[in-house]
Length: 154
Image (cartoon, rainbow, N blue to C red; front, side, top):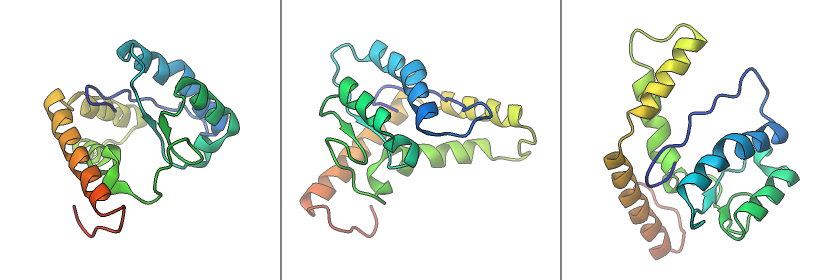
């Protein structure tokens, strides 16, 4: 997700997600889309600390593609663990998708679930993304002002 668009969705087809599978997704699916949109290479890439993201090959790839411009576990820019209030995917996107997908009648097949997820992603408008980024800037400001200390509710 960026200020301008949501990338995806990407479905891992009947596979366990490990570091190699995740790296393939980055190289084949995500990075070509980012490169098309970000000709100046201004993107700061962020990922959580999930084990597949920590594979040495993944980190090496991100170091090459986003030198000093990626956030995550063992990244040039550290990301505080357990900080969902600071990530737009956590404080906005996943809740929006869940609320949009899981309305009665609930999906009963995997293809129907995938269709609903794709439709939900398409409902995220540019105006919504502007609001999300205004909110994330506010949240980052609060975090900076409080020196990253615990904040009960934002």
